[in-house]
Length: 454
Ligand code: TYD
Ligand code: MG
Image 1 (tube, rainbow, N blue to C red):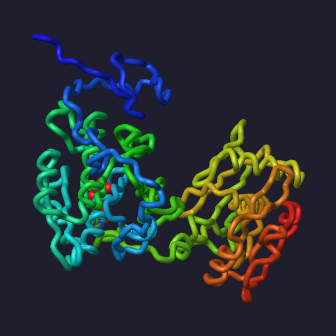
Image 2 (image 1 turned 90 degrees about the vertical axis):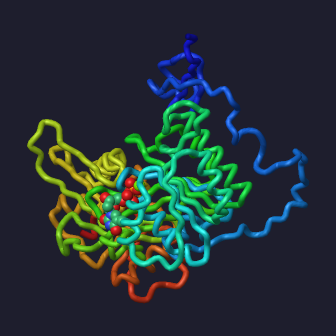
Image 3 (image 1 turned 45 degrees about the vertical axis):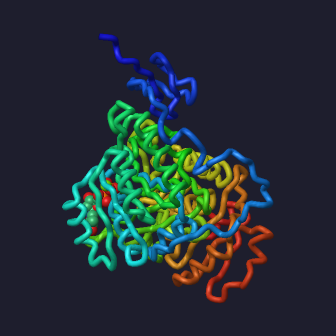
């Protein structure tokens, strides 16, 4: 018997090769090749463009640019991340760790829109009974949601043909397969084929399709990277295992901004929206304790107040220990070097731990000032007033630089009852629109001025 022909695929980027390679020439990943049977037939989705009957180019001016049709789900946090509701005919990938709540979120979305739209929930992971049990936990459904427990793409296609739903959920892409492809579900060629078919269906039939994708431990959707390139929108659902809150983040969005986040909390009856994340993040914070500083960070257009904590203490090791959770470790080291040089304090014999309470991960430089203030506060063992917030970027010479959206940050702090705000001494800081009435601004130009405040 002749040996079945196989090809090798890179699991990271989908690079195809006739032989096994140690390093992928496409994305330079090591040890990422898997062997899969060769597909003889041309994958169905790849034959022509989306619904194109004849390949005739159109002048740009003649194409109508009416606003895409959108459906609001009623879950405000979800709508915002999508860029203002579900776009008709879009393909959205929802990625996240197992157990984070992807299926719950999408089932809740189905519930919200089921009164006015025809919804089909296809699961390859759970039986219809299991989905029903989950739905019962979520509460009453105002309309009909069709359930289908299926993994074969041919059957799914004919179900879509017959039922003509407006919104479809596919849970999950890694369980879907097409017979002709031959390899196991979840393999590179199956995932690629399934996504291409779903993309074609979404565009041809103008169905909005949500696909669930599991995430590998490296933090990308399992299967080829290419999956992310093919879909219109990629959302990640993330959160700490220890914390109840979940953040939905757009990492790619053809129909909106990628800066927006949605905050949810997992409860006994599904996910509930957290409309005021600042209050949520600050719950249970210590008052008048050294090493705790409140700052505002921007998540998209939303200011969120978070608490930065630092602990500086005498080391018991030859090499002082430094850790950073929720902020960049190297950034903390850099800020400590700036403090040593510009303030003349020595922390060489000290361990230093920095943590953002609540498990948020902050990448923006506006948090620098709060980190330095928290470190100083712990080092000097002097508490920062609990009604004070601080934000600003710190440069290598110790200068405090301005950050974006100053007035929004100050307004959010004012709204939550803060009385003092330490801000960068910059031109932009002086002409904040609508001078806040109930908050006193303290401008600092460099970290020496900041240290003098303590
Ligand atoms: P699930 O949506 O199944 O996660 P995913 O599809 O991302 O794998 O959610 C899983 C977790 O959420 C599960 O551990 C149980 C919990 N959960 C609740 O706490 N409350 C609820 O009402 C529901 C439906 C789930
Ligand atoms: Mg699931």
